[in-house]
Image (cartoon, rainbow, N blue to C red; front, top):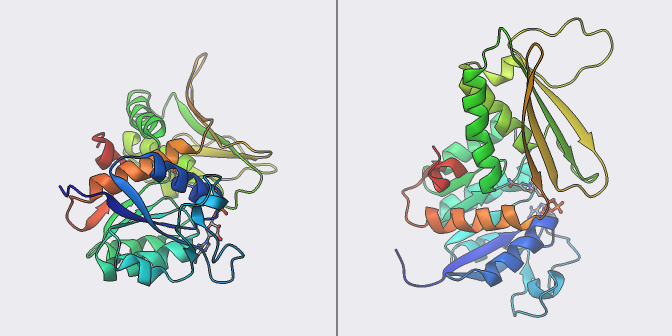
Length: 272
Ligand code: NAD
């Protein structure tokens, strides 16, 4: 373990999560904000990263040159978009540093690129970086195992703010994967992501998703296990984005001492 502060780069620095990450790093002993990166053409290029996050000037100017920042840094915190995260994974592999990916809505092809980059980078990727949701995933797996598909139906309900661009949320999919793992089934072939019109009766053993969007909701998730005459609901409410940012910084510090590879928050939190 190095005794010096871990040099971190925030990409997507002007975003909702980017600004939260900048404030979180400033408050976290053992870390320093080394650089802040935005997309080429962003009106935030050249601005002070602290100023745009409500901290006042901190002397870190937002740039659009990620590789220049990565080669001198030890870790990247990335809550951007799938296309950007794939590019950043390649650059993190070139620089052989830690890459924490919180971006959601990634395709199977994107996941293959992350796996390839993890031969050289230490990647931690999770659809939700909070302790609470990762614990909820463990509880969901247990509940899905204990309450079998013949008598219990599993539905996952989520709500997020109106600006969110992907659905179901990364967290809903994380919880779906946990339920599928408890049941020993493949989520992709067993999930019902949308219902509309005359759908016919529910197929036993499937995992259903329902998506709500509106207002400023940070993240509400419920896993509903519905049986004959009784129902079990496991749920999580996020009331502050700092839970994700704190988890991401914890993941970077943890990954600093790991071998190259693709890890999840369950590994970081010792819940795997
Ligand atoms: P946002 O739109 O507010 O911020 C994204 C930022 O990334 C924007 O400022 C955008 O300009 C920037 N960006 C895009 N392409 C870039 C590039 N090539 N280089 C540099 N910057 C680039 O979105 P947000 O609400 O902060 O969420 C971002 C992502 O994080 C989403 O996928 C969201 O679902 C996910 N998220 C994950 C977690 C988690 O715990 N895993 C929690 C919250 C949000």
